[in-house]
Image 1: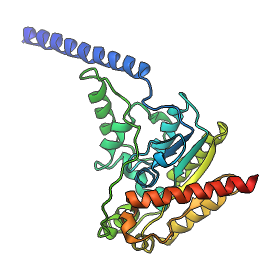
Image 2 (image 1 turned 180 degrees about the vertical axis):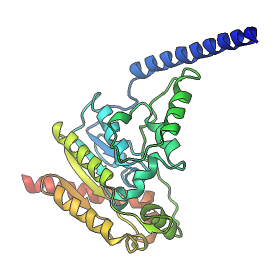
Image 3 (image 1 turned 120 degrees about the horizontal axis):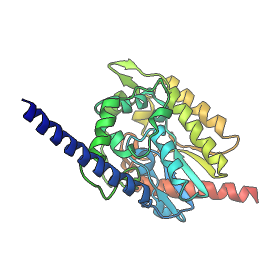
Image 4 (image 1 turned 135 degrees about the vertical axis):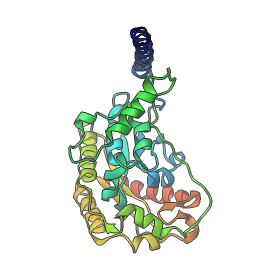
Length: 293
């Protein structure tokens, strides 16, 4: 029995050393890994709405780094990390009504979301600095960290840089499903997320501290989706835009009456819609600049 315990202890020590050795290597890789993003004048951030509506090819020296379902918590930590490498002249922040819905608060606790969120952010998040009221699945988080650091050396640990992507298709059949996901939980209407609003404020303040021009952008939504947004969410969205409009550029075009063929689905533009939207945004910004001169 003692011999077995000695062998087991020896094996455990070797295994622990293996995990520690891999973790040390991965920590070194993380520290030395260069950001896979070129310096750019315009940085486009947000979730799938901005990912699909803002094609950087239509703008001068722009990069779209949006990722699907990205909450403002991740956006804040993402751009804070990027600003260590370079500071853009302008940042475009996607801001649609669903971005302040409380469904975003569940993305770090729900098994449907947490694993993906932690896959992107295990090198970004400072969990001791997250708000106490945020439900945080620590078991899933530490499991993800262990898998990504301890098992074997990985060449890439930067999983938080997205890109523009889109499709020419159009399917408007999912409105109830997406409304339920954004604004309801178990049949109950969700409130405005104080956490999301707070992190949006933090993003704006961070950009202001760097003297970066801020554009809050709400891209067009299909009328079927618009008519089902809860009034409280819709009112808060307008109020926040009005608050920021005093010092920053705000573009609230969720009600722009685009043709059905320009929508990928009820809350995203497709490739054709994104092209139309890009030129309208460019003209809008150009008019603002001309009015200043």
